[in-house]
Amino acid sequence: MHSHRRTSRPLYDEPPRAHTRCCDHPGCEQAGEYRAPKSRSQLNDYYWFCLNHVRDYNKSWDYYAGMSTAEIEREMRQDTTWQRPSWPLGKWATQDRFLRDRVVKGFGFEFGRESAGAADGEAETRRRAAPTPEMEALAVLNLTPPVDFARIKARYRELAKQHHPDINGGTREAEEKLKEINHAYNTLKACYGV
Image 1 (cartoon, one colour):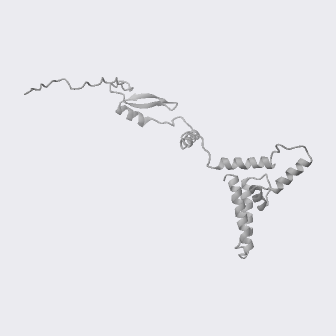
Image 2 (tube, one colour):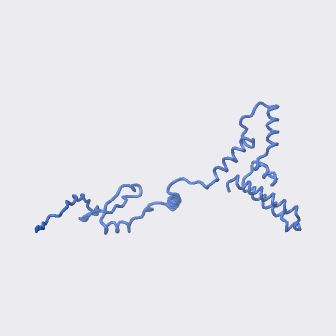
Image 3 (tube, one colour):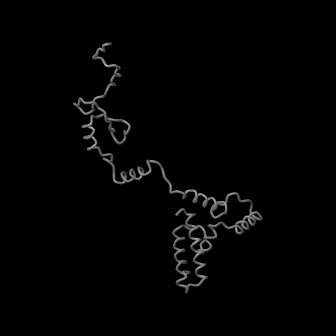
């Protein structure tokens, strides 16, 4: 029989312990295992505290200390989008398309115009021959550019009341006219990104 001797030495070597930092609280000798930011302007620069002292620090920490109400509100708004800029979905592309159409069709700036005369007449004919959905919608509401959305909305309400089937005895013509007005309003609403 073989005899097994017991030794006090472990069968495996323990890895050397990493040097632990001391708690940053004055006079504390415990290990500083919990980090806490030093200030609002130095969020990546930390104090290292023991559990008790990090709890005390967290109780007294006020990120918004020294900020005005407006600054706090701005900070909170930015935090809702993770400090990144944000735009309403779809609005920018629609508005961009609308502005490009206005420039190309000549409602604002007249880029690429040729000399006066026949070229202007041809451009005007093309413009009238192929109106954009936006221009058709403005025509239904009896509006001409430039116009803002508040004016469009006011005109829509005015025409919707005027042509509502209930006011016009339920006639088929009034119903069709109201459908046309609603369609025009929805087209313009999409163009203005509302």
